[in-house]
Image (tube, rainbow, N blue to C red; front, top):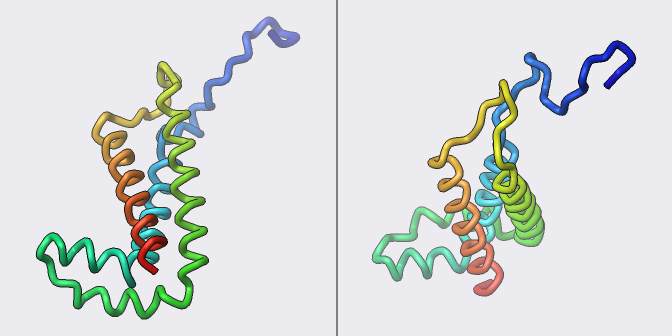
Length: 129
């Protein structure tokens, strides 16, 4: 309580309501893009060729990403780890704050799928370089 008898809460002001989980989605997308760049030279062509898909279109990505492989690896790890931490924290919140936008199950499932795909791409890019 403050000096006027009003109860202070942790709910955001009406003008500052934003989507809960947007940070985890953005970090996951950034980590997934960096992981794609890391894996485009070596691991991803093996994976796509195993699935019967052509990999000639990856040549441009591989030429651009190869000199920056270590930076992309670090950015991918940081992005995916940050997205996973925010995703985990979001799952621990039992209820959404009043006036805020909550993510639906489809967004949560896509975020989890993006985290897992990013981890696979990072592993392929690191292991097959």
